[in-house]
Length: 230
Image (tube, rainbow, N blue to C red):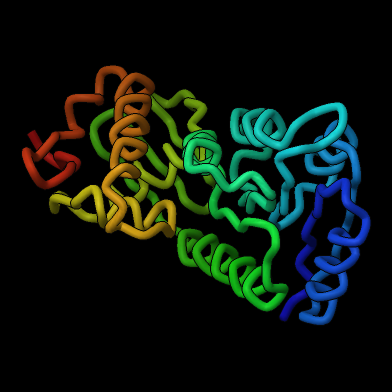
């Protein structure tokens, strides 16, 4: 395992130390922060390979940190794994809608947490194969992690970027909501409620694509496809 940096933002010292110990055993470099504001500053400065983020933090909560990181193009690509005792479905859904990549509830198995970290990093690596898509006035460069519309950059959240990438990579094929849920969120496609998250992100993506938004076609009872040619 390479010395990728992981930032753990957790105010419970024993949990932070447990996570740090198990990740360092796997060869990761681990940074820790016990407060929300300092954790955010570290993420912005260090730009780690992944952030493990508690929801309930002093000074700045985890959902707000997630929102700030995902709305900034310089940090939007950083995967976030939520680690929290709040296990209600509404909290999990809100985390995913803000751009979180995975969710682990306390109490947790250290082995499971390490496995989840590796899975998120693998998905990030799989998405990073260098490709450039040019369709109409739209361009997506996976190496630079940038999307251009008429030659000007547009800011997308990580999930919006990954959705667009998946649709373009399908080369005109229709993709089901379940497939997108699994591909982009790495989440169980059998949970029907989660498909609303896909629809919400598609709606936001359409708004940002402006004149090219009509290329995202809704396929009734199936999902979506991206029109390559008119």
